Length: 347
Image 1: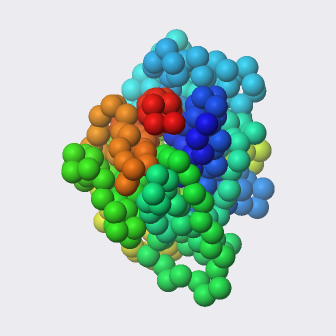
Image 2 (image 1 turned 180 degrees about the vertical axis):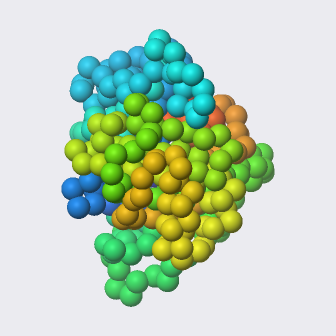
């Protein structure tokens, strides 16, 4: 069977890795982060625990309902609340269930990576063809250093190269295109055009500790469509934190306008804007800048499996299925299945 490198240890990458391993292939998962999860990230600060990225998931397809039932049975998923989290919208008690990881959203991915060969803290520098295989060139990312690919290379940083019969990539599409450009390789023109159509909204996420009880709805979540503040979660109510802990997502327009501003300036502005929603003052503890938070151009659900040189190169992620956790999972599964079919023919 084939050796496959999966780049990205978020939902799409881990689901793809499981499907490829179930098909009998040897799989290595690499990620630049120091923890799995991708945009299902979590963070603990002074005992308070925060969901930093995705705040809940929903299951609309039969395939994903079966998966969420498995995760619920495994004790890593539960129903948080029913109905809409939108401000001013009545929430029916039997409305659509919003599901939450136990205790955090990242817990789902941590469950999924059990038994997988996952290598964290490695940044992909290039992917290059080698006869019938692909070489994935990696550089180790020092702790405490930002994740941007445009940062100068650290002198003496460890490097390594993994060779594989195929590569499946789940990074945000602009980062995939940057790696291919650095590698000096091109996908077929139709694939290049498909990737070039990808666009994303950024998101500024503030983690804060409230100074008193909040006025959020009893479910501990509030979404404000088209607002400067798009979402607020009380992580204590969601079950992520034993202590009061707020996650505040800025809206796309504000995030784009303030993305490069000083962290303290952004924090002050977001807390001022959020005050009427939470009903209390709060102390900022961390600002996270999601450059590629939400896909705004869906690339289509058809699995993307092409070739670099003579070896298969596949791309998956939420940009192909609508920007939700379910979309990322389904994209990872379908792309892995399509890649396994290609490997069965070429192997």
